[in-house]
Image 1 (cartoon, rainbow, N blue to C red):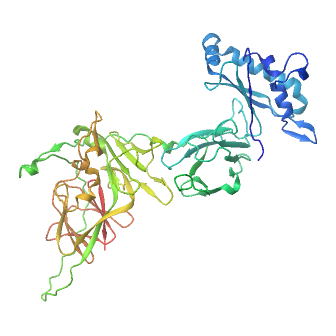
Image 2 (image 1 turned 30 degrees about the vertical axis):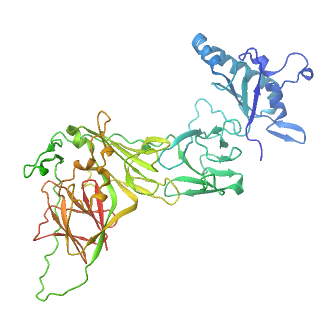
Image 3 (image 1 turned 90 degrees about the vertical axis):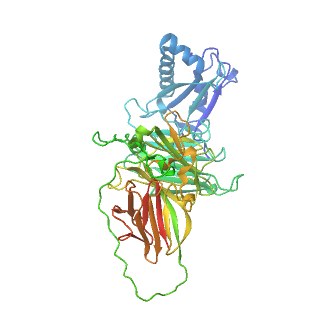
Length: 521
């Protein structure tokens, strides 16, 4: 494989800001065994015909000890760094002027804590490019291991034809944080200008698979061989045009209108058990679609007991700004590696956090990052997590709907009345956000289960039938919604009594509190 980045280190340099001392040795160079910058450029030409160089590299990066760079900034406001770059540029132009052609000579000086006193690193080569002062960014490159947390890597400029990403900056243009592959592997970005799409290649070719996912907008690079965990390591690469996309960090959600009263903990006076507090936001006023009344049959027929299922298909995250007076500051939960849902822990495959300003964050072992809504994540191969924006009829109450990668279901008996709510023990395993650590107060302390934010003790009752669930409201303050099989809004369920129940067909969904329940045959 060709050398894309020439990387050398000069040692025992008495004055790292002395350009002449870095450029060439005094006196006869044949008597000096140490290579200098001029020697390195001469030995590694950019192009040559036979043994004769026809073109040399013109962009050079120097890395000095960080303490030296800091001292120069403190004492001379960076004058020695600027003088070093300008003097080397002049020496380079003087000695290699006939091999430069139309190329500009550019030097860039950096500092590094990894260098010892008297050490100077030199980088140049096919994949080293220094932009002009007024050159705009053509692409921005970022990487992720889980599609949720994206870390910036580098910009790509219009005239930077080759950019190499790798494990460290010694053999690549830029080091990739969390590089999962071998040290000798590289990702090549080939840029033929603004009118041509960027080309992504991986070296060695036979060791990797590289595919572009148009729906997600990133490349998936996967090793053909498994690592110590038994799974092939992978890296997701996103090449975005221009500056970083604003959609990755959306503006904070607006506060509720001043005319709407904030949610409060409301008490009920029926029984001592019902006296528990429930946060109830303002009710939605959309119309309901009642189910047609059942036609009584005069002849009774005995049939086997029909069993159906109710599944937790998604989680509807509330607007916490509506519950400001309750002290609720954050809702957090995680998707475990077995695809179950529970409190957010460091070993979760993918987690979500909602703050008091209704901003949504993705949380993985790589960190925490604010995300846009809608969005889509693939934390590992074969796992798809969609985050949907709520329909306009629900946007006042909800900030996002997180579709679960694997629905958690329970069987229900047909012809029997069931109740869903905080006091219903039968379906309590579907209320995955009721764990104490899922809701946090402003002081960061666990505030108990999140179900008090919008879910009544008895939210709704339902009876499974051959055509779906016949739903009745059990609480006048409970907001209920009907979504279709694709989670599209159908109606708000407001008028649903025992005499005129509301029919939710098989495959459709009921939203109550944080839970999106699917009716399954």
